[in-house]
Image (cartoon, rainbow, N blue to C red; front, side, top):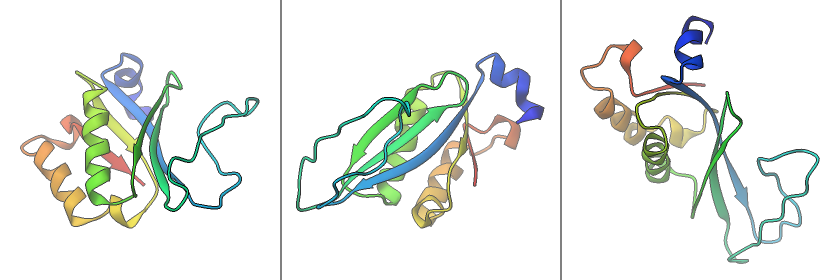
Length: 130
């Protein structure tokens, strides 16, 4: 990130820290993204199934980009990446995320290959780091 400091500070490169949260039937407590000194309540919509939330925290301003899904999988990961692009016009994205299998799937790799096609790594619309 140090080599991209100027581009990050100027807002041309947006750094996002991404993870998913899965709330399961029977959960009394879970974890969410938010301020540690404030309680955050999330209603369980369907008590018989799990709810999944994809979230990304902006490294510079702390803004949270949250979207609900029915599961963590390749299709929903791609949809969330499209959402992040829509929320970041005229910015390239540097994403830090874990090694979930659906982050590394062929579908996600193909999507990244399509949107970054013909660009040098320094120009990629999305660059992912584990």
